[in-house]
Image (tube, rainbow, N blue to C red; front, side, top):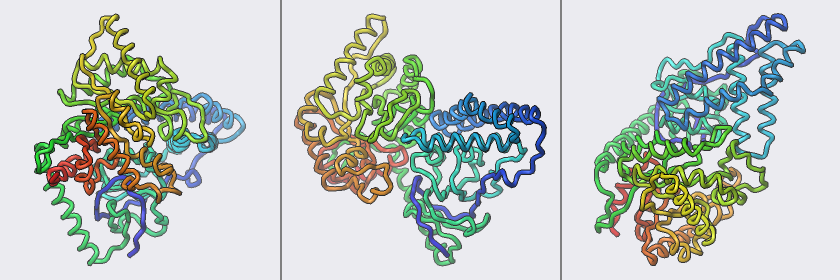
Length: 539
């Protein structure tokens, strides 16, 4: 019996056989090389087949996981048609290299180039180039991807390319364990979208396990246990039953109001990244959306979304919520959220650089396009607009002025705009906390982004694993700043909420309510646990 400690990216407990996934190796491929003309023809054929496969994967992911998680395969279709990539493959074939090795070499070169860039988003594209290269090579070698699960299993792999993740039969996947991996990779997002337990950075050697071996995947405490003995299996049988019983018990809170014992009403909302996620909002009984991450509209594409595209998406979201509040955060781009379509300059320290509202105020036409889309959609439901990364009153006033200009221009063009659209800001910096009284006089609400507030308060990059031990959103310095914000909001008669990860920490629910927060926005899966914690709060 061996325990391997990993990092949780999707919680859960499961006891199941393991499926050890081995990536396709070109060295093991039996391939008969033809003439240069034949190799070129094979390559062109593989491009057509791969494009059709990616179309099918896009549809599959769209139906099972939602639009934002399916866009990856549109990105792969674009990459597979990249002229520079195709030209490099063709040149290699013309020099005498067979098609599979030409694709491998070109894909490896492009992946290394992406990996060398000082840009998190572009580094993620390195894995995508490896993914499309492997797809083309498998087609050329007539080898199917090894994704056939005969029994429900926990998948163990070095790392999973995004298309590999989605091609597994969904009904057979009980969990993922990756030896490598990133919490912000497409694969991690897909795993969470599938709602299965998953670990990354788990040091299991290839020879340690074979397909069919029984394992315990504990994606609560963060470990994989191989060859568990009878006593431990019995313990986990109880843990799994307890967890299932707790999930069943939480269902009692599904249609109950979010009210403390003393009668204090708390608005319990959800954080989402797409219209498709609204189904989870409804399924978990949230009272609205406290954070709609609009930056997802800009990610995974080479061109900016138009005003019409954005209007359509915001309209769909508002209609789907049927009168529940939708708080849209204007584009929070930059730092760990890089997008190709904006072509931002590389920065030595992007977390402290040009991001979020700073991009918007520097590019007024870009900002106005998003704001006009929001204003046009506002007549179809209950909308609020929220600006991220504020550090000054001047920034708030500039944003308000631009919104006023957008309203005026739309009305002149005979568009309708809702009369009452609450305007709020995210509190994510110590500067905003210190200026909370002055800022409260300018807005309708505050929402604290505890992830960034913790990062900036503790001078600790939340994306850097080397300083992960310093990152603690329950640090007293963070909590004191949050209390200052809640008190300032009360003094000025506006409401204050929390949309960062801390909002879902049920051990702090009572304290946060005592501070004066009247809104908590969490991931849909945490809704009922937080509602129960609210109901148990005496304050």
